[in-house]
Image 1 (cartoon, rainbow, N blue to C red):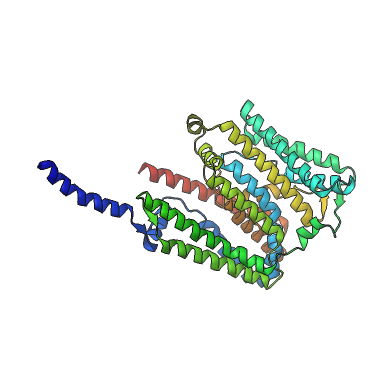
Image 2: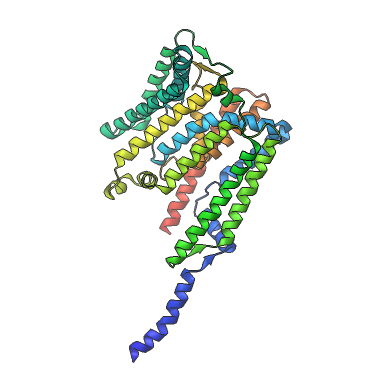
Length: 418
Protein backbone atom coordinates (compact mmCIF):
# COMPACT_ATOMS: atom_id res chain seq x y z
CA UNK A 1 0.00 0.00 0.00
CA UNK A 2 2.79 2.36 0.87
CA UNK A 3 4.58 1.62 -2.39
CA UNK A 4 1.39 2.39 -4.35
CA UNK A 5 1.04 5.74 -2.61
CA UNK A 6 4.69 6.59 -3.28
CA UNK A 7 4.25 5.59 -6.91
CA UNK A 8 1.13 7.71 -7.29
CA UNK A 9 2.93 10.68 -5.73
CA UNK A 10 6.06 10.20 -7.84
CA UNK A 11 4.27 9.82 -11.19
CA UNK A 12 3.12 13.47 -11.43
CA UNK A 13 6.65 14.60 -10.52
CA UNK A 14 8.10 12.47 -13.32
CA UNK A 15 5.50 13.84 -15.72
CA UNK A 16 6.45 17.40 -14.77
CA UNK A 17 10.15 16.54 -15.15
CA UNK A 18 9.49 15.03 -18.58
CA UNK A 19 7.57 18.14 -19.60
CA UNK A 20 10.49 20.28 -18.52
CA UNK A 21 12.93 18.08 -20.46
CA UNK A 22 10.79 18.26 -23.57
CA UNK A 23 10.27 22.00 -23.18
CA UNK A 24 11.35 24.04 -26.20
CA UNK A 25 13.63 26.97 -25.49
CA UNK A 26 12.09 30.16 -26.87
CA UNK A 27 13.63 33.53 -27.75
CA UNK A 28 13.80 34.66 -24.12
CA UNK A 29 15.55 31.43 -23.12
CA UNK A 30 18.03 31.76 -25.97
CA UNK A 31 18.75 35.36 -24.97
CA UNK A 32 19.36 34.36 -21.35
CA UNK A 33 21.65 31.57 -22.52
CA UNK A 34 23.62 34.04 -24.66
CA UNK A 35 24.01 36.44 -21.73
CA UNK A 36 25.17 33.61 -19.48
CA UNK A 37 27.61 32.52 -22.17
CA UNK A 38 29.12 36.00 -22.40
CA UNK A 39 29.33 36.29 -18.61
CA UNK A 40 31.17 32.98 -18.45
CA UNK A 41 33.84 34.39 -20.76
CA UNK A 42 32.78 32.75 -24.03
CA UNK A 43 32.47 35.85 -26.22
CA UNK A 44 32.30 33.95 -29.50
CA UNK A 45 32.26 36.24 -32.53
CA UNK A 46 30.98 39.26 -30.58
CA UNK A 47 34.34 41.12 -30.44
CA UNK A 48 34.72 40.69 -34.22
CA UNK A 49 31.35 42.26 -35.01
CA UNK A 50 31.97 45.11 -32.57
CA UNK A 51 35.40 45.65 -34.09
CA UNK A 52 34.05 45.71 -37.64
CA UNK A 53 31.40 48.24 -36.62
CA UNK A 54 33.99 50.54 -35.04
CA UNK A 55 36.34 50.21 -38.00
CA UNK A 56 33.55 51.04 -40.45
CA UNK A 57 32.41 54.09 -38.47
CA UNK A 58 35.93 55.48 -37.98
CA UNK A 59 37.24 55.01 -41.52
CA UNK A 60 33.99 56.16 -43.13
CA UNK A 61 34.12 59.34 -41.06
CA UNK A 62 37.71 59.93 -42.19
CA UNK A 63 37.15 58.90 -45.82
CA UNK A 64 33.64 58.11 -47.17
CA UNK A 65 35.20 56.05 -50.00
CA UNK A 66 35.86 53.28 -47.48
CA UNK A 67 32.30 51.92 -47.68
CA UNK A 68 31.93 52.52 -51.41
CA UNK A 69 30.74 49.28 -53.10
CA UNK A 70 33.71 48.94 -55.44
CA UNK A 71 36.18 49.54 -52.61
CA UNK A 72 34.56 46.70 -50.66
CA UNK A 73 34.79 44.47 -53.75
CA UNK A 74 38.53 45.16 -53.95
CA UNK A 75 38.78 44.42 -50.23
CA UNK A 76 37.21 40.98 -50.81
CA UNK A 77 39.62 40.28 -53.68
CA UNK A 78 42.56 41.11 -51.40
CA UNK A 79 41.16 39.12 -48.48
CA UNK A 80 40.93 35.79 -50.31
CA UNK A 81 44.65 34.94 -50.44
CA UNK A 82 45.45 35.93 -46.86
CA UNK A 83 42.21 34.31 -45.73
CA UNK A 84 43.22 30.96 -47.19
CA UNK A 85 46.53 31.09 -45.33
CA UNK A 86 44.71 32.06 -42.12
CA UNK A 87 42.33 29.14 -42.59
CA UNK A 88 45.28 26.77 -42.32
CA UNK A 89 46.56 28.62 -39.26
CA UNK A 90 43.24 27.88 -37.52
CA UNK A 91 44.01 24.16 -37.74
CA UNK A 92 47.37 24.36 -35.96
CA UNK A 93 46.16 26.91 -33.41
CA UNK A 94 43.34 24.56 -32.43
CA UNK A 95 46.05 22.15 -31.26
CA UNK A 96 47.96 24.85 -29.42
CA UNK A 97 50.69 24.75 -32.10
CA UNK A 98 51.97 27.42 -34.49
CA UNK A 99 53.34 27.63 -38.02
CA UNK A 100 55.66 30.58 -38.66
CA UNK A 101 56.55 29.50 -42.19
CA UNK A 102 53.14 30.12 -43.78
CA UNK A 103 54.34 33.31 -45.45
CA UNK A 104 57.41 31.65 -46.91
CA UNK A 105 55.31 28.65 -48.01
CA UNK A 106 52.94 30.95 -49.88
CA UNK A 107 55.90 32.78 -51.41
CA UNK A 108 57.46 29.50 -52.58
CA UNK A 109 54.09 28.44 -54.03
CA UNK A 110 53.86 31.73 -55.91
CA UNK A 111 57.38 31.24 -57.27
CA UNK A 112 56.62 27.65 -58.31
CA UNK A 113 53.53 28.86 -60.17
CA UNK A 114 55.62 31.26 -62.21
CA UNK A 115 58.54 28.90 -62.84
CA UNK A 116 56.52 25.79 -63.70
CA UNK A 117 53.63 27.36 -65.59
CA UNK A 118 55.23 30.36 -67.33
CA UNK A 119 58.87 29.34 -67.73
CA UNK A 120 58.65 25.54 -68.00
CA UNK A 121 55.32 25.37 -69.84
CA UNK A 122 53.67 22.92 -67.43
CA UNK A 123 49.88 23.03 -67.61
CA UNK A 124 48.17 25.14 -64.96
CA UNK A 125 46.27 22.22 -63.29
CA UNK A 126 49.48 20.20 -62.95
CA UNK A 127 51.29 23.27 -61.61
CA UNK A 128 48.66 23.81 -58.92
CA UNK A 129 48.77 20.09 -58.08
CA UNK A 130 52.56 20.24 -57.70
CA UNK A 131 52.21 23.28 -55.45
CA UNK A 132 49.68 21.52 -53.21
CA UNK A 133 51.80 18.36 -53.00
CA UNK A 134 54.78 20.50 -51.99
CA UNK A 135 52.69 22.13 -49.29
CA UNK A 136 51.57 18.74 -47.98
CA UNK A 137 55.16 17.48 -47.94
CA UNK A 138 56.37 20.50 -45.96
CA UNK A 139 53.56 20.08 -43.46
CA UNK A 140 54.37 16.38 -43.14
CA UNK A 141 57.96 17.28 -42.26
CA UNK A 142 56.77 19.62 -39.49
CA UNK A 143 54.41 16.97 -38.17
CA UNK A 144 57.18 14.34 -38.22
CA UNK A 145 59.59 16.62 -36.32
CA UNK A 146 56.91 17.39 -33.74
CA UNK A 147 55.85 13.77 -33.27
CA UNK A 148 59.18 11.97 -33.54
CA UNK A 149 61.54 14.38 -31.78
CA UNK A 150 59.06 16.51 -29.77
CA UNK A 151 60.57 19.55 -31.51
CA UNK A 152 58.47 22.62 -30.63
CA UNK A 153 56.51 23.75 -33.66
CA UNK A 154 57.82 27.28 -33.09
CA UNK A 155 61.40 26.11 -33.74
CA UNK A 156 60.59 23.67 -36.55
CA UNK A 157 58.53 26.17 -38.54
CA UNK A 158 61.01 28.98 -37.91
CA UNK A 159 63.69 26.81 -39.51
CA UNK A 160 61.22 26.06 -42.30
CA UNK A 161 60.63 29.77 -42.81
CA UNK A 162 64.29 30.31 -43.59
CA UNK A 163 64.63 27.19 -45.74
CA UNK A 164 61.53 27.92 -47.81
CA UNK A 165 62.53 31.55 -48.30
CA UNK A 166 65.94 30.43 -49.54
CA UNK A 167 64.32 27.94 -51.91
CA UNK A 168 62.00 30.65 -53.22
CA UNK A 169 64.93 32.95 -54.00
CA UNK A 170 66.84 30.07 -55.60
CA UNK A 171 64.16 28.95 -58.05
CA UNK A 172 63.32 32.52 -59.08
CA UNK A 173 66.94 33.08 -60.04
CA UNK A 174 68.65 36.41 -60.66
CA UNK A 175 65.61 38.01 -62.33
CA UNK A 176 63.65 37.76 -59.09
CA UNK A 177 60.27 38.22 -60.74
CA UNK A 178 58.03 36.43 -63.25
CA UNK A 179 54.97 38.07 -64.77
CA UNK A 180 51.85 35.99 -65.34
CA UNK A 181 49.89 36.54 -68.58
CA UNK A 182 47.14 39.09 -67.94
CA UNK A 183 44.73 37.29 -70.26
CA UNK A 184 45.18 33.93 -68.54
CA UNK A 185 42.25 32.38 -66.64
CA UNK A 186 44.07 32.45 -63.31
CA UNK A 187 44.81 36.19 -63.50
CA UNK A 188 41.26 36.93 -64.59
CA UNK A 189 40.12 34.84 -61.61
CA UNK A 190 42.29 36.92 -59.28
CA UNK A 191 41.45 40.35 -60.67
CA UNK A 192 38.28 40.43 -62.77
CA UNK A 193 35.86 37.50 -62.55
CA UNK A 194 32.64 38.24 -60.65
CA UNK A 195 29.78 35.91 -59.76
CA UNK A 196 26.46 36.36 -61.57
CA UNK A 197 24.02 38.35 -59.44
CA UNK A 198 21.44 35.52 -59.35
CA UNK A 199 24.03 33.07 -58.03
CA UNK A 200 25.20 35.53 -55.36
CA UNK A 201 21.65 35.98 -54.09
CA UNK A 202 21.02 32.23 -54.07
CA UNK A 203 24.17 31.63 -52.06
CA UNK A 204 23.16 34.42 -49.67
CA UNK A 205 19.80 32.73 -49.02
CA UNK A 206 21.20 29.19 -48.75
CA UNK A 207 22.71 29.47 -45.22
CA UNK A 208 19.38 30.56 -43.76
CA UNK A 209 17.58 27.66 -45.42
CA UNK A 210 20.17 25.21 -44.08
CA UNK A 211 19.86 26.65 -40.58
CA UNK A 212 16.09 26.14 -40.58
CA UNK A 213 16.36 22.62 -42.04
CA UNK A 214 19.10 21.57 -39.62
CA UNK A 215 17.30 23.21 -36.69
CA UNK A 216 14.08 21.33 -37.39
CA UNK A 217 15.90 17.99 -37.75
CA UNK A 218 17.94 18.52 -34.58
CA UNK A 219 14.87 19.60 -32.65
CA UNK A 220 12.94 16.51 -33.71
CA UNK A 221 15.77 14.21 -32.69
CA UNK A 222 16.20 15.88 -29.29
CA UNK A 223 12.48 15.85 -28.55
CA UNK A 224 12.32 12.18 -29.51
CA UNK A 225 15.04 11.55 -26.92
CA UNK A 226 13.16 13.63 -24.29
CA UNK A 227 15.84 16.33 -24.32
CA UNK A 228 15.38 20.08 -24.36
CA UNK A 229 15.37 21.56 -27.85
CA UNK A 230 15.76 25.03 -29.28
CA UNK A 231 12.39 26.47 -30.19
CA UNK A 232 11.48 26.96 -33.83
CA UNK A 233 11.12 30.70 -33.19
CA UNK A 234 14.79 30.90 -32.22
CA UNK A 235 15.88 29.01 -35.33
CA UNK A 236 13.71 31.18 -37.59
CA UNK A 237 14.96 34.39 -35.97
CA UNK A 238 18.59 33.33 -36.41
CA UNK A 239 18.01 32.33 -40.04
CA UNK A 240 16.10 35.55 -40.79
CA UNK A 241 18.80 37.80 -39.32
CA UNK A 242 21.60 36.00 -41.15
CA UNK A 243 19.71 35.93 -44.45
CA UNK A 244 18.81 39.61 -44.23
CA UNK A 245 22.46 40.52 -43.53
CA UNK A 246 23.82 38.42 -46.40
CA UNK A 247 21.20 39.56 -48.91
CA UNK A 248 21.86 43.19 -48.02
CA UNK A 249 25.61 42.63 -48.39
CA UNK A 250 25.12 41.13 -51.86
CA UNK A 251 22.72 43.92 -52.83
CA UNK A 252 25.25 46.54 -51.76
CA UNK A 253 28.17 44.82 -53.53
CA UNK A 254 26.06 44.49 -56.70
CA UNK A 255 25.84 48.30 -56.77
CA UNK A 256 29.52 48.03 -57.62
CA UNK A 257 31.11 45.13 -59.48
CA UNK A 258 29.58 42.31 -57.43
CA UNK A 259 30.91 39.36 -55.44
CA UNK A 260 34.32 38.05 -56.63
CA UNK A 261 34.64 34.40 -57.58
CA UNK A 262 37.95 34.43 -55.74
CA UNK A 263 36.27 35.27 -52.43
CA UNK A 264 33.54 32.74 -53.19
CA UNK A 265 36.14 29.99 -53.58
CA UNK A 266 37.70 30.98 -50.25
CA UNK A 267 34.29 30.93 -48.56
CA UNK A 268 33.60 27.46 -49.99
CA UNK A 269 36.80 26.15 -48.39
CA UNK A 270 35.76 27.77 -45.10
CA UNK A 271 32.44 25.91 -45.27
CA UNK A 272 34.17 22.61 -46.04
CA UNK A 273 36.64 22.98 -43.16
CA UNK A 274 33.85 24.05 -40.82
CA UNK A 275 31.94 20.90 -41.72
CA UNK A 276 35.04 18.77 -41.14
CA UNK A 277 35.68 20.37 -37.74
CA UNK A 278 32.11 20.21 -36.47
CA UNK A 279 30.61 17.13 -38.13
CA UNK A 280 33.37 14.55 -38.37
CA UNK A 281 35.34 12.36 -35.98
CA UNK A 282 38.53 14.07 -37.15
CA UNK A 283 37.15 17.48 -36.17
CA UNK A 284 36.07 16.32 -32.72
CA UNK A 285 39.52 14.81 -32.26
CA UNK A 286 41.10 18.15 -33.17
CA UNK A 287 39.27 19.93 -30.36
CA UNK A 288 39.98 17.08 -27.94
CA UNK A 289 43.73 17.16 -28.63
CA UNK A 290 43.80 20.95 -28.40
CA UNK A 291 41.95 20.87 -25.08
CA UNK A 292 44.09 18.17 -23.46
CA UNK A 293 46.42 16.06 -25.58
CA UNK A 294 47.13 13.50 -22.85
CA UNK A 295 43.44 12.98 -22.07
CA UNK A 296 42.76 12.62 -25.80
CA UNK A 297 45.50 10.00 -26.10
CA UNK A 298 44.11 8.01 -23.20
CA UNK A 299 40.66 8.09 -24.74
CA UNK A 300 42.01 6.34 -27.84
CA UNK A 301 42.66 9.29 -30.18
CA UNK A 302 45.79 9.03 -32.33
CA UNK A 303 47.31 12.35 -31.29
CA UNK A 304 50.28 12.04 -33.63
CA UNK A 305 48.07 11.50 -36.65
CA UNK A 306 45.91 14.50 -35.73
CA UNK A 307 48.96 16.73 -35.38
CA UNK A 308 50.35 15.51 -38.70
CA UNK A 309 47.07 16.23 -40.48
CA UNK A 310 46.84 19.73 -38.99
CA UNK A 311 50.33 20.72 -40.17
CA UNK A 312 49.72 19.24 -43.62
CA UNK A 313 46.44 21.12 -44.04
CA UNK A 314 48.05 24.34 -42.82
CA UNK A 315 50.95 24.18 -45.28
CA UNK A 316 48.68 23.08 -48.15
CA UNK A 317 46.32 26.01 -47.62
CA UNK A 318 49.31 28.36 -47.35
CA UNK A 319 50.52 27.02 -50.71
CA UNK A 320 47.09 27.52 -52.27
CA UNK A 321 47.04 31.01 -50.79
CA UNK A 322 50.31 31.67 -52.60
CA UNK A 323 48.67 30.68 -55.90
CA UNK A 324 45.79 33.06 -55.14
CA UNK A 325 48.27 35.83 -54.32
CA UNK A 326 50.11 35.29 -57.60
CA UNK A 327 46.79 35.45 -59.45
CA UNK A 328 45.86 38.65 -57.66
CA UNK A 329 49.19 40.37 -58.40
CA UNK A 330 49.69 38.73 -61.82
CA UNK A 331 53.28 38.01 -60.85
CA UNK A 332 55.61 35.85 -58.79
CA UNK A 333 58.46 37.71 -57.12
CA UNK A 334 60.96 37.60 -54.28
CA UNK A 335 58.67 39.82 -52.23
CA UNK A 336 55.78 37.32 -52.35
CA UNK A 337 55.01 35.94 -48.90
CA UNK A 338 57.25 38.42 -47.10
CA UNK A 339 56.34 41.58 -45.24
CA UNK A 340 53.16 41.35 -43.19
CA UNK A 341 51.77 38.10 -44.63
CA UNK A 342 52.67 36.05 -41.54
CA UNK A 343 51.37 38.74 -39.20
CA UNK A 344 48.10 39.19 -41.07
CA UNK A 345 47.35 35.47 -41.39
CA UNK A 346 48.00 34.65 -37.74
CA UNK A 347 46.33 37.84 -36.55
CA UNK A 348 43.23 37.10 -38.63
CA UNK A 349 42.80 33.67 -37.01
CA UNK A 350 43.24 35.06 -33.49
CA UNK A 351 41.12 38.17 -34.03
CA UNK A 352 38.40 35.96 -35.49
CA UNK A 353 38.16 34.03 -32.22
CA UNK A 354 40.60 31.11 -32.44
CA UNK A 355 42.48 30.72 -29.17
CA UNK A 356 46.27 30.69 -29.08
CA UNK A 357 46.03 28.22 -26.21
CA UNK A 358 44.28 25.55 -28.29
CA UNK A 359 40.94 23.80 -28.05
CA UNK A 360 38.73 26.70 -29.16
CA UNK A 361 38.03 28.27 -32.55
CA UNK A 362 36.32 27.69 -35.88
CA UNK A 363 36.90 27.94 -39.60
CA UNK A 364 34.76 31.08 -39.65
CA UNK A 365 37.44 32.74 -37.50
CA UNK A 366 39.63 32.99 -40.59
CA UNK A 367 36.91 34.62 -42.70
CA UNK A 368 35.79 37.18 -40.14
CA UNK A 369 39.30 37.87 -38.91
CA UNK A 370 40.75 38.47 -42.36
CA UNK A 371 37.95 40.91 -43.15
CA UNK A 372 38.91 42.87 -40.02
CA UNK A 373 42.60 42.83 -40.95
CA UNK A 374 42.04 43.80 -44.57
CA UNK A 375 39.55 46.50 -43.55
CA UNK A 376 42.21 48.08 -41.36
CA UNK A 377 44.81 47.82 -44.13
CA UNK A 378 42.41 49.18 -46.75
CA UNK A 379 41.29 52.04 -44.54
CA UNK A 380 44.84 53.11 -43.73
CA UNK A 381 45.77 52.94 -47.41
CA UNK A 382 42.87 55.25 -48.28
CA UNK A 383 44.17 57.70 -45.68
CA UNK A 384 47.62 57.61 -47.34
CA UNK A 385 49.28 56.58 -44.10
CA UNK A 386 52.66 54.88 -44.16
CA UNK A 387 53.11 51.13 -43.92
CA UNK A 388 54.90 51.64 -40.59
CA UNK A 389 51.66 52.87 -39.04
CA UNK A 390 49.78 49.95 -40.56
CA UNK A 391 52.18 47.51 -38.92
CA UNK A 392 51.87 49.21 -35.56
CA UNK A 393 48.08 49.42 -35.66
CA UNK A 394 47.70 45.81 -36.82
CA UNK A 395 50.08 44.71 -34.07
CA UNK A 396 48.05 46.63 -31.51
CA UNK A 397 44.82 45.01 -32.72
CA UNK A 398 46.46 41.58 -32.45
CA UNK A 399 47.64 42.36 -28.92
CA UNK A 400 44.12 43.41 -27.93
CA UNK A 401 42.71 40.19 -29.41
CA UNK A 402 45.19 38.08 -27.41
CA UNK A 403 44.39 40.02 -24.21
CA UNK A 404 40.66 39.45 -24.76
CA UNK A 405 41.34 35.75 -25.37
CA UNK A 406 43.44 35.48 -22.21
CA UNK A 407 40.84 37.27 -20.07
CA UNK A 408 38.05 35.12 -21.53
CA UNK A 409 40.05 31.98 -20.82
CA UNK A 410 40.64 33.08 -17.23
CA UNK A 411 36.96 33.92 -16.83
CA UNK A 412 35.91 30.49 -18.15
CA UNK A 413 38.34 28.79 -15.76
CA UNK A 414 37.06 30.71 -12.72
CA UNK A 415 33.46 30.15 -13.81
CA UNK A 416 34.13 26.42 -14.12
CA UNK A 417 35.61 26.27 -10.61
CA UNK A 418 32.61 28.14 -9.26
